Length: 91
Figure 1 (cartoon, rainbow, N blue to C red):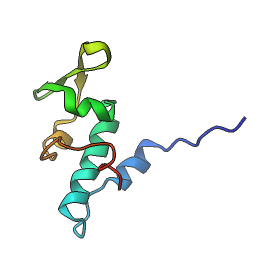
Figure 2 (figure 1 turned 180 degrees about the horizontal axis):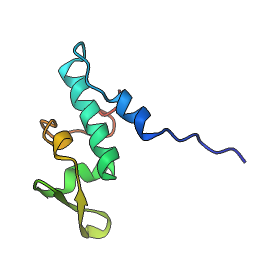
Figure 3 (figure 1 turned 90 degrees about the vertical axis):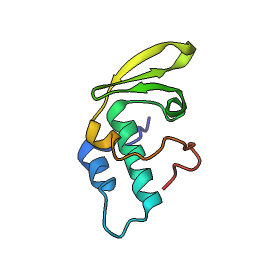
Figure 4 (figure 1 turned 45 degrees about the horizontal axis):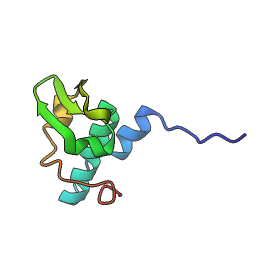
């Protein structure tokens, strides 16, 4: 049986690091990917965010259940909008 390799947190943080030559769109995508990784949200749940405060995001998940998710405010504050689909998220 063959298993998929898993990348480490450092690898993801390195890949989503903002560089000066990155376009605005690429910067936004990197922050969304980092946001999804840090919070554990599913990509489709970006559309179901009910509220965001300094520590917790309230999101409507599977079965229309509300759940609270902790987040990193430094990453969240760099996201300009959450109007993105799984197809447009590709880097």
